[in-house]
Length: 59
Image 1: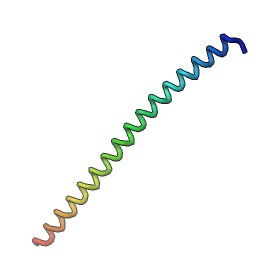
Image 2 (image 1 turned 180 degrees about the vertical axis):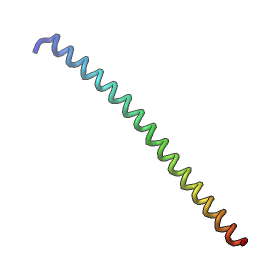
Image 3 (image 1 turned 90 degrees about the vertical axis):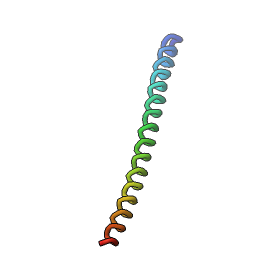
Image 4 (image 1 turned 180 degrees about the horizontal axis):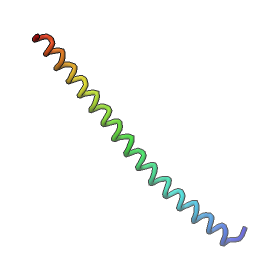
């Protein structure tokens, strides 16, 4: 391998690594948003269940 081909390979590796790190950050952000939405839905379901139980008790 020549010095130039090694340099080209290093540039290619660096570029791919930068892209992978960016995508990983985006992936982490999406996972956190999904987890937050899940807990909001669980809270809403619990509140709705409590309200339905109270309403059923009044009837």
